[in-house]
Image 1: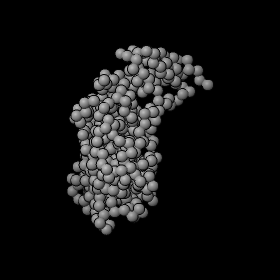
Image 2: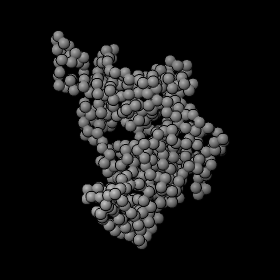
Image 3: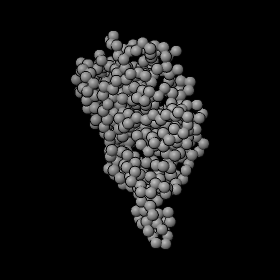
Image 4: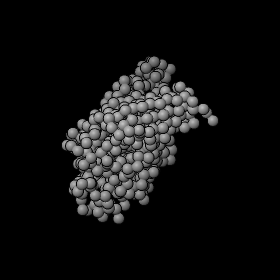
Length: 85
Length: 386
């Protein structure tokens, strides 16, 4: 069993609780390809999106984090531009 | 009996409106399609006659420099950069002011295709689905092509030849599935053309296949064909050997390798073959293979209609050869569409997705919207056909 001892915690503030919940729901369904090397957990706490990464080494961590940040960017842009409510 | 009006339009409208998002390869497409509610759809196999109205059909292609193909990571970045802008433009064009009220369903490509580009579009699809409170349908890309082709051409039950950069399949409908009769055993025909275009270092704009088609038209002696491997394997095809062979020829041609007797006259050293001849020979050879297996599929299912879909389906020479074969069979017809619908687009995803939605096959559970690189045509339950 690998030790997932390379960790990172991200806190991303959204304008309101609804948006942070949307972000969690959008991100959560995608499976992690190698769960023995890399794990992610998404939580919404009020208006905050909290993401916990755990990984076997720095390289895997960096790749995983940057891919999640790319997705978060898409979500933020979509909320900014396409929420008509 | 098929009832296409199983799920009625939202908010008491007398029409359906679907948004389609496509991003399985290097094209990002957003389309909006409108279906009127028709009483005859309550009881009948009429999914090829939806009287679809195309409200918007926008596409942005990620074009790479000559000699280069598109890589998943860069393509995904392109889609992420453009996705929201294209959705916005499509809504404007279609005159949709409040999507949460005016749309019935959001359709996106769930597969098959490149993982990263598919995923980047799926993220946007999930987000707007949650923001607007509208259900999602994850569409099989191949089924999207088929349904768009049927709707545009009005072909009720054709044998489908699906030829594109990622897929080469001969498909016929039977018992609620689109069944694959024959397919490529290795690379797709469009992939073969694209990679040959890279060897020739011709531009990828508007598409590599289009540029090969133009070169092939310039071939001066169409009677003398450069011989290439002809690799039909039962109902299946193999294309990688042809590619390797013709790439060797092209490289010998560029290097001026006079030892190659196919390209140069052994006595005088005079060049016998041009790049145009190679393009022509490649097309003739591969299209003949496609026509052969398509004809056999038609004989199997007793059909006299062929529908050609997918990016390579725009090729006029392929359409012509298919037409000749159909003409030789009693009253055969070939149906094809132009580049707006042949090449990947969002409208086709909206069309197929809306049919699924109308049969009650939509979802609000995001766990069912995970994209998949491998998603075979016959995995889809075709509820909208008899």
